[in-house]
Length: 94
Image 1 (tube, rainbow, N blue to C red):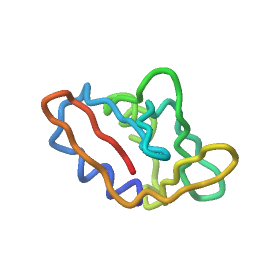
Image 2: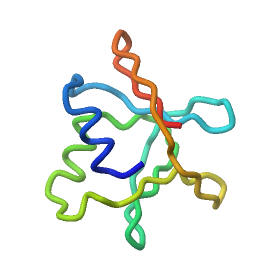
Image 3: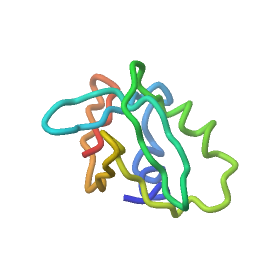
Image 4: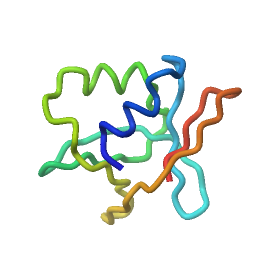
């Protein structure tokens, strides 16, 4: 999944929507975004990234077509989809 794809999919959602990562059948908060060599690495953390924070971080970026990857234990995993839980304001990237 590319950053532009994610931004288009979440465009109509609440600004306080929180992001989570599904890693080995466990759901953990997405805590950090790092841009490295033309790709975005998503790291688990203690507090979940919100849509508002994501927009602040990438709002002024020129190249939003970068691929997003989940980084865990020095391995990078591609993101193939997401699950939107509107009733609990959550998005799970998997």
